[in-house]
Amino acid sequence: MDIRIDDLSSPATRSLLSLHLAGMHSHSPAGHVFSLDLSGLTSPGVTVWSAWNEDDICGIGALKQLDTRSGEIKSMRTHPNYLRQGVASALLERIIKEAQMRGLQRLSLETGSGPAFEPALALYRQRGFVNGEAFSDYRQSSFNQFLHLEL
Image 1 (tube, rainbow, N blue to C red):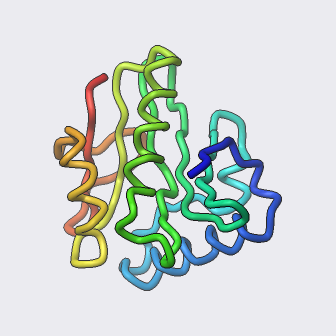
Image 2 (image 1 turned 90 degrees about the vertical axis):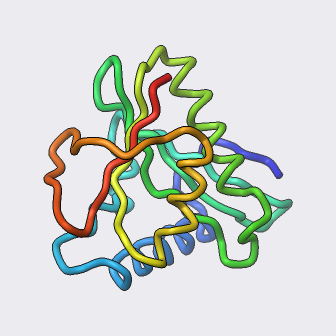
């Protein structure tokens, strides 16, 4: 698997991003989807990585730098053909490594609740993320939850 910075110009990457956004909308109540679309992922301060198996996209993940000390994990999605093959774990490790290289002290993420979110939550918790308070511009609700990893 080859993990590389992605400029989101390839049809495969855009297709996976569309799948991700559709999934977030189908498993979240109205007004509780905070996934970045193409314009959000190409804005300054956001770096996107994609994982590839030759010409097949395996997954995507992004780091949004919030300030000089903290970052947010965004748009983590494994392609359905590559589920449970270590793609998300490899992308998460790449994002964590980049955050450490940038000197960030904390990584955070916002996600939802329910069965659709459990595999991702298990991955984050296994890597040391813990539930905590809302951050950035997010507001706590009965649906969303916030996880943090001190670097």
